[in-house]
Length: 309
Image (cartoon, rainbow, N blue to C red):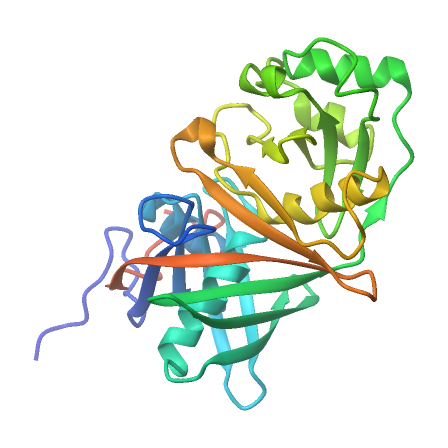
């Protein structure tokens, strides 16, 4: 009998895991926000899941374990840099992939995702040749507008002229991840970009995690990793805050379905739908396009950095 294969670090490979590659917030492949959904693996170490995410080279990866009896999904979300406590497009893409995997004949399914100690409702349904999904991001938290001098400083951080869009304020809005919403004009949006190397610290100073340059007239936004190197294609966790911002400043009605655009500047146009419900909860969703499927064979092969040798 052949011996069990081992990794270059001397650790045996764990069981293989299936994965689904989907594009979220688009109804056609090779647009929208790419995602790898791995069925299983939530019990692996963060270093291992981070290594898998980097290997797959998509915008994010989500690892899911389903308790089918309760439709409860344990999930962990990773970028190539870190594990996230919350994210939008991974949960929406995972719900569509799970729908296809466990109940392809069902017209609709409901799920409860548990991520970093928080539970979120997600619903999926047939959409054309594949599925669409929406998640309940809950009620938004809206902080007071930043002082004019601080807002002007963040405008400079984003390579913008001070003043924003028609006098709208710069403020932090959160439905799980706090975004600093910086209002811009359509012309200014095209030239926006992070031009400092200490954005993490600046955002922490105002209680935000990320920044979202947002054109409220065209309902289009842009955001990046905080180093400014990678622009996000479609940011579900920012869609709820952006919609709440529009309602707060009477640029949208409280019961209006709000369609937001993102990704034009990356060549991957995307649309995100936000539905404010009567209970003030925000449901964020969109279509999901299937791209590929496969199986991970090499798991458990990342050396524990605390181990000798």
